[in-house]
Image: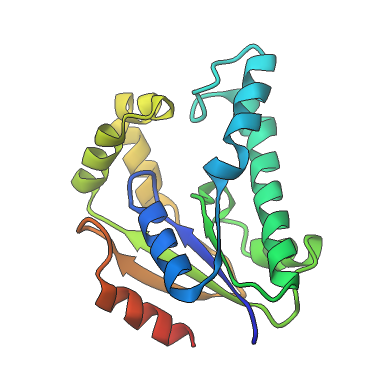
Amino acid sequence: MTPTLFFVIGPAGSGKSTVSKQIAHRTSAAYLDKDSVATFFTEALLELAGTDKNERDNNEYYQGVVMDLEYRTLLRLAGDNLRLGNSVVLDAPFVRYFPRASYLEDAARENDWPADVQIVVVHVTVDGNRVKQRVESRGYDRDAWKLEHWDEFWATAQAAECAWRGAHHMLLDNTADGASGDALDALLSAVE
C-alpha cells in the first residue's frame, strides 16, 4: 500500500495537534510532532547561545539557525517512516516555508521519500477569537510574544498562503473543539 504523508498546518492554537492525532489514529499513521521531536534540543541550543529558551517568535538565533534544524529533522524522520511503508502525520506550523512552491519536491529529494508517496496538506482553519482563547488557555511560555503582539501575529498568520505544489490540499474547519468525526471521515475518504 502506498504511504501517505499528511502535513497538518495552521497557526498556533488552531488545533493542529488535536486534528493530527485524530488523523494518525484513524489511519494508523506515525505521528510526528515538531515540539516532541525537538523541544529539548531547541531549548538547550537557545540556552547555549545565551538567549531565552522559551522565545521563538522574536529570537534571531532561533529563527536564523535552530528552526531550520527542527524542520529538517522532522522531514528526515518522516522519510525514515515512509521508506518502511508507514504513513506519517506531521504536526508543525511550517509557515515560514509556505511561499516556497517547490518545498515538498525539495524535501522529497533531500530526504529520499518514496516516489509514490501521496502527500496531503490539511489546512486547519479556525476563527481568530477562538485561536486567541486557545493560545491563552494552554499557558505556554513560548506564546508570550504572540499574546503581547496578538494583532501582528494574527495578521501574519492570516496572510500566510501555502504555495506548495505536488500535494492534495484540503481545508478542515476546526472552530469547534476538535474536528467532528464526520468531517475527518469526509477528509480521509477524499484522500483514498
